[in-house]
Amino acid sequence: MPFANRVLVPLLCIGLAVSAAACAKKAAETPSTPAAQLSVTGLDLGRSVGGDKRVSEKVSDFHPNDVIYASVLTSGASQNAILRARWTFEDGQLVNESEQTIAPSGDAATEFHVSKPDGWPVGKYKVEVFLNGNPAQAKDFQVK
Amino acid sequence: MGLFGGKDDKKNKPKPDFSNVQSGSSSTAPGPAASAGRTYVVQKGDSLSKIAKREYGNANDWPKIFEANRDIIKDPDLIHPGQTLKIPSA
Image 1: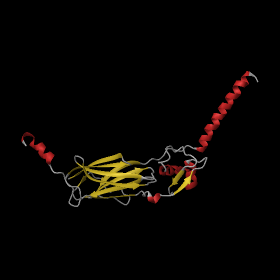
Image 2 (image 1 turned 90 degrees about the horizontal axis):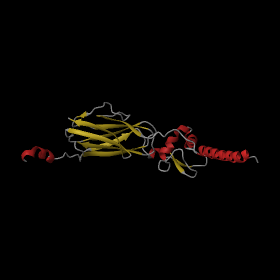
Image 3 (image 1 turned 180 degrees about the horizontal axis):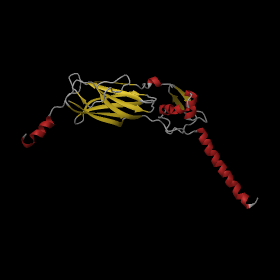
């Protein structure tokens, strides 16, 4: 066998083997487009929500007898995600904390609401939204 | 109280009582129970796109399967024969 063949043939075989292995992996595990991972895209506050769970009118100042709504907008899909709303007063005093488990397949809105029968103390408040335990959005508001 | 009386008064101001706060929540998204579905055992040559095409008729629905199986699939491009995947309802 000529020298060129003795060197080139094995190299060619190795090259083909590597290509074949790469192709086999590709066929078995076809790459797909990036995952549409669930994320929080918005947080609105208001005194009421519609059937679409979005606030009818966005406000940041409330009255003591208001029911306060927070509408959390999400995009993406998830089989099991936990949205948590944490409401605090002024220096961080906990007002309320509640969760909603969702399994959206696309854009969705989730509302959280709080009320206080004897009226909200006047002052500054904050609502923080967590997605699967991670801080996602927050908004300050006042009761006057 | 003296010179710092004002500060002390503020510090000692009783905190409001929020124990009677009522709360609730609802969503346009279904809960996990509503989307519970069947399972599928991965065969050789499968991909999430192929499974989505077969289960839903649309290969682009593969993220539904990926999200439902995040506990066992770390990389959507890497599934292995023998894995049992949850297939959520379409």
